[in-house]
Amino acid sequence: MEDQHFQQSRNANTDLEEELENILQSLAREEPLESYTPAMTASDAVHQCMLSSGALWTLPFDLSPPAISCPATSLSALRLDLQKPIISDLSTAARAETINQQAFYLDYPGTTGSFQHLLHLPEIERELLAHFPRVGELRYESELKLLSSSALNSTGISLAADLSNKERLPSRRGPGIVLTSILSELSPEEGSPIVSPTANSSFSSSLTDEAHADHEESSHTVAVTAASGDSTAARAKRKSPARVPEEDLPSITTHEKQQSKTAKKGKKRIREHRYAIQTRSEKDILEDGYKWRKYGQKAVKNSPYPRSYYRCTYAKCMVKKTVERSSQDPGMVITTYEGVHIHPSPATIKNSSDTTLNSSRAMYTHFPTPIKLLPPCNSFDLATQIGGQHCHVP
DNA sequence: CGATTTTGACCAGCGC
DNA sequence: GCGCTGGTCAAAATCG
Image (cartoon, rainbow, N blue to C red; front, side, top):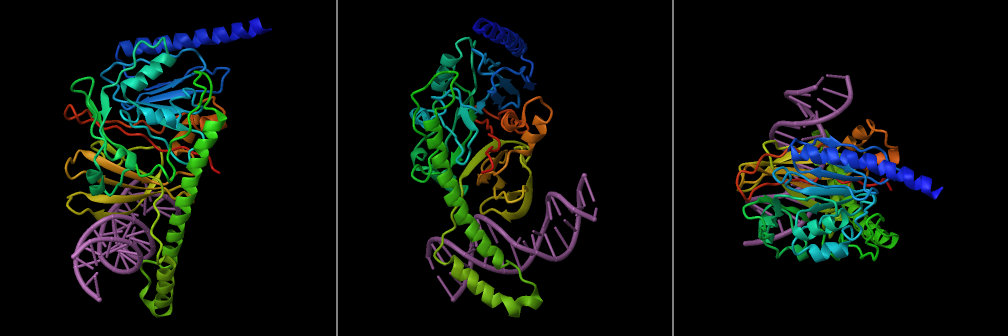
């Protein structure tokens, strides 16, 4: 019985290993790998990688060990989206913290089923290689550039304290490509993405329940607190329309304005989780998998480029984003996201309908539409982007 | 014709 | 209080 199971598992592994071998061969030929979906395995776990070049890998991580390899020239960053974070020590904040000196680690508060990591430094590479011993090589050409606090302030974004003093990291690869900033406004006290370390660093295991619970708890605290503050302000504002029809002015303006002012007095606008992404792109609007409706545009001080305001079109989803071009570098698009989606990405749903995956799983097994990036204009100037967040509806 | 974008007005917060 | 700025609203215009 056990032998039979072992044999089946072995056969599945062989099939998948063949597919992975094909990928490696494809990569060796430097053909762009747009998408790879492995055969279903006994495990529900799927490990996806999307390259900043737009290529998407879906690797079964219950197989040991999937290969990750990529032509050095085509991979500027590797994003792992772990439905079940099997690289558990990478999925924990303890790990994140220790690598934080050299790597930027991004996690999304409020996200309950998906974890995203931007991997770009040797320590993480070694970590991956340790887990994927058969990997020929995991390469990337990028490094992280964290903006200084003052630079951030000029974009209206403040930086978590523990990141504010970080300068651009030295490259170990000589003139490489810089992966520009991904920033979080969350301070550690009010909901750090950091979660407690898990003792279990087994390759095939999920993040331990304890660690997972910690993560969720801290995430939710932030999401709820911030969301309630913001929605209160938003409600107060909606009660008092920005522009009241002329004929109604005498009847409602005074009273409601007063009410609104009273309601808001002493209440600072509480921002939800915010993070900004700089992307080098010709297009102002980058596909991130979500649908947005523009609701405003403003001229930005000291910049020839306006800032556009977008809101997620999904009902009751309060996520907003602003998009503007950098005045210093017009090729750079700065996108600031605020809030946490209460729904999966429409792109996720769309993609998953084309697969044989079951629905609960499909929710997390595809990235939003890959983002096409322009080639770097100089050796320190490639930006890449992480797409939208995924989270379960509470 | 519904969805989306544009655009000027409005409002709150902040510094002076 | 005033002016400036960022953010939002909502009618009108435009798009698909």
